[in-house]
Image (cartoon, rainbow, N blue to C red):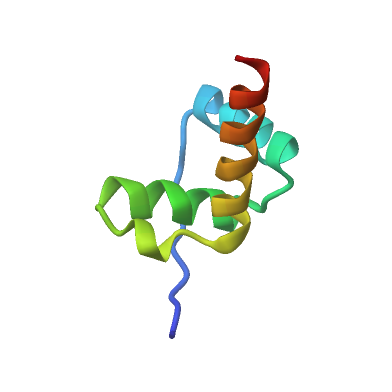
Amino acid sequence: MASRAVNIRVPETLYKRLQSHISQTGSTQTDAILAAMASYFGADNMVPLVERMSQLEQRLSALEQG
C-alpha cells in the first residue's frame, strides 16, 4: 500500500501523552498515530500489527489482574 507523509502540530500535553503511550507499548509514533486515525475513521483493520499486539497485551494484563 502506498503511503503519504503528513505533518501536524499538536498541543504539548497531547504530545506528552503520545510519547508516554509509545514508551509503554514499544510502538513508534507512526504506528500509534495510524492506530488512532484508523480507530477514529472506523478502519480498525488498518491498525498496525504492533499496535494490535499492544492492545491485546493490555487486555490480557487487565484480565489477569481482575
